[in-house]
View 1 (cartoon, rainbow, N blue to C red):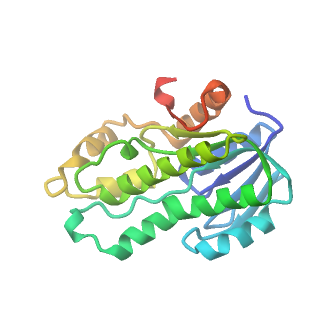
View 2: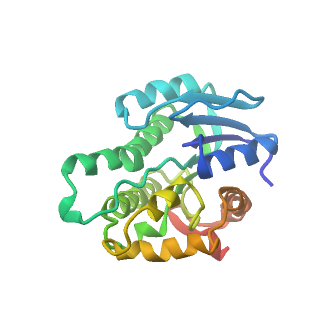
Length: 234
């Protein structure tokens, strides 16, 4: 179990980020939260509200949030799904909006840690299997997650004194799944599998997945920086 560590988490207000925050606070860790809505004030929690779409404000928000020269674990969890639809119906502004949150915001955070020389034990990108191969109608999400994967791997190459890892947690029962279930499977056939899994309650809760991630982190010390790790195969 991770205890008495300093941990930065993005996207804490719901889903996996919220569950990770709760579990890590319960372990006596100090959590720094960067998310779009405020969190309830608690001991060992420092929270700053930041809309990650506002790229130019991120470093200012981090300066307010991080009054430390060391963060043990950085968990880059925040991400958005974007619309699932035919690629021919996607415009450039939609691509820019999802890349702001899923890619560019993470670059701003990582650059801040490097420029300010804040020491880190491990930097974790919460990835998705969507980063490995495209799915029908999923261009926005798949392409942004693939770019995020390469972002983490590129930092791993260029910052050898820091450890970077990509973690794929698998499916999680969150608001994202609810959005997927609203999509017409006759138009976007790739959502059929997800809708079936949701209907049969085969998708684990955010707390189950968060617990698996926290347990897996301790096992990841032996992984090479830049590695991709699916926690379902731990």
